[in-house]
Image (cartoon, rainbow, N blue to C red; front, side, top):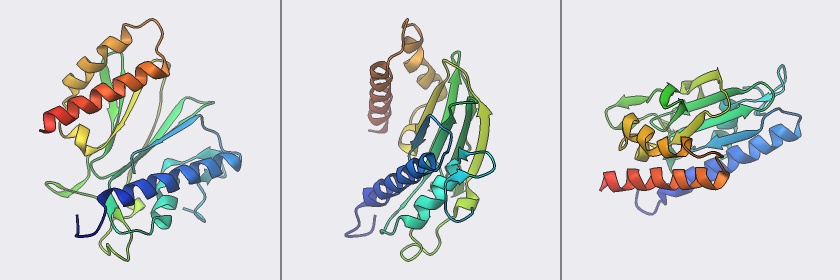
Length: 199
């Protein structure tokens, strides 16, 4: 980080702006049940032809509106409530994994200029060499009940292998009813596991 720059400020404002764009997309009549972010047209998040809130549009809107020093890798996922379609956009070495029946069935690709130099979004005034949303990987797939979606930064993905991840969440599948509290506990367990492995 540059002297005097809070490295978390850009990420926090970016996520706030993406969440605002998501809420406005739903207010415009968009279809979705949930959106998750770690990170076209006139800047609207709503795809007029399908009535769906698009993750890459959320990323574009947040990138345009985040005007502070700093940069971030970004992963945003949106679940369409009517069709069970999961869309995600990823830029850099944050990422998305979808887990089903004890296996990772889909995941994003880490994007790097070179080793340890991931693609990043930043405010062009302070970071003229910023990547753009056009560089993001975008995927769409059908999910089903019981699938687990992991959206994480490189702090997790660089420190935890898939077998460790699957082992850590195996206990969740043994519960008769998965609650939001149980999912929260699992997220805390995974974050702690990554932290301890990074030391």
